[in-house]
Image 1 (cartoon, helix red, strand yellow):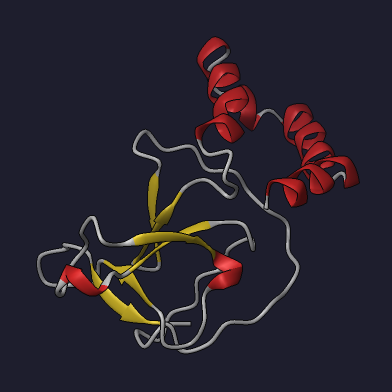
Image 2 (image 1 turned 90 degrees about the horizontal axis):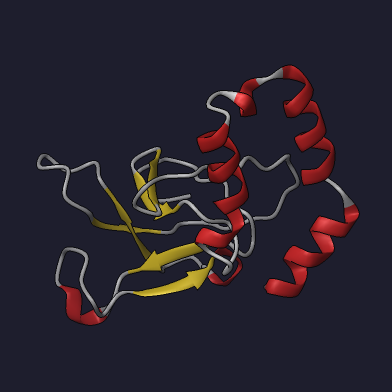
Length: 139
């Protein structure tokens, strides 16, 4: 939760850019990327709820755990904005490789990921104990 009164749900391994001391009010090369489970109240992450839409810092006011299904999001930049907060579109340090099979499949068969049968099969695989163990190993 940030002082913007928003809630951002991430996996523990999800990479999050954290504000660096040498960055002034915005984003810069001094920012570091940490797994979400390392965030703590007082850390400063980035949001886009500014008049210009440029990334600015927001203070984390709370962190807690929970369980919910995960969705993979593939973006061309590797970044996404959720509830005004800037974050990586990858949920593990594997980065682009974690979404590469989905991008390839959708390139070969556009729209295939929205087919009911494919969505069902992917849901079963994505929540499988084997995949969860592999993701924990990457953390």
